[in-house]
Length: 139
Image (cartoon, rainbow, N blue to C red; front, side, top):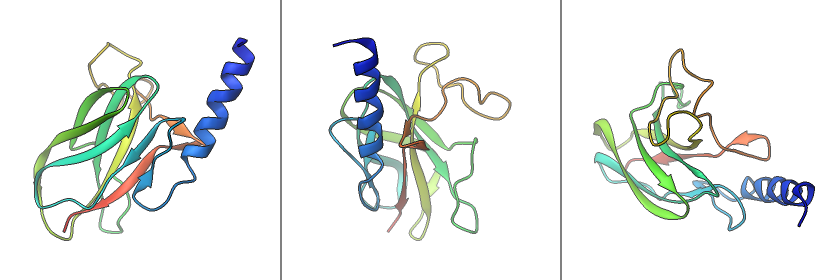
């Protein structure tokens, strides 16, 4: 398979991953997340699939229910398809909403570096031109 065909295949797979349903950006051909509602506590558990090393990142939400970024409240390294549990910096309570996002590992390997003043490293993984992200309710 040529480099061009591989690139085209990856782009097509990323486009398909973005068409899944609510709380699910899951497809077997590109980066994806499947997340069920979570119980109150200090961790979030999701299923992810990625074709590269990266991170599952938990972003808090603001009063309008939108993600707060680039700040995050937790992250965990990934390498392929896994069930991942991410510890978060605060107690999640019933009624909270968080956003689970996949990020690439483009800086120092294994170290999550995306954040305020550092958005050029470890950027979000994309599918269909959009970040791979799902909202998750705490119930």
